[in-house]
Length: 418
Image (tube, rainbow, N blue to C red):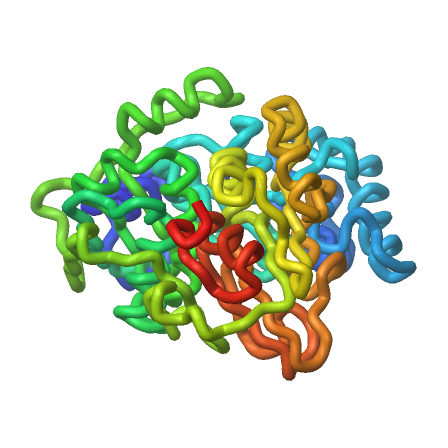
């Protein structure tokens, strides 16, 4: 079996499962945010459930329109708070303690290797970077899982992606996954497990792995997953709140497709409007002027991402025709950025340094684009109207490219600035 099949088999009490099989599996953690939890809460009440299956296994994180941007957002967030109090949920994260959900849960040790995790948010697949099976589901599935502790799945076929060779300077997990999506398309892994392997992945730090699995959904994947190793052990051993288990694929495991990539040939990559698969080398886009730069999100808002952007922009200024918004993904990352002097670097460069929020990524608040405006962002999606006006444009990049672009006022590579 593959790593995905092994985790699913373990959670449905079977010796083995095969692709296409329908199973009912026990979940280790359920999560929802201020947009998706209110629907789940409404449905939970409708089905007449008396209680949640486990008050310590449901995480509610207001992060999309939080800190609350208007009355409607405040009402949505209040629903999470009220439900959490009513059912005594231990994993409710209020503003000031919260962060972007997919950065917060791994940081807090609440998702661990070998887990089966569902979330009412498509980027739940992020936790595959730890060697867990994690996938986004609808709010009604979350409602029934909150009552029963179980969810149904169709076992996905697995695709293997092997990365070898040495990464070029400034190239990281974001470039690898953008390059891959550019190669296979936004439906290239439709309802498949994207198993990410190879020597380049073995040497990829945890933040790069989480970034790659985060964007599996952008290729249509059911989940992205990387077999846990020494890097995983180093990351989880000090923070895991529960026992964890390392799974790996059998040598004889079957894959519906195998793709190989030579990382030495992968350049700094940017996804152009209006699809994550519309990729081009960053160096070929120097004629594209920009109005806004966003560094943050569940894709690239970790401390290493902020360090990368700060390294590029240190001692320089954001172009006068550009606004730059830097959003640490959690309170802990925010504090670390202050301690390391990163916040000072950004503010001195004339960038905004914000409290944690998903904010502009989904056109929520704090950085909405007007008609005709163009942004480069370290986020994960660039669909029409994703960050604001339907006639605005979003380009996706890694933090170093975003920071270089902020200085130049156009899409740029770090070596132009550093």
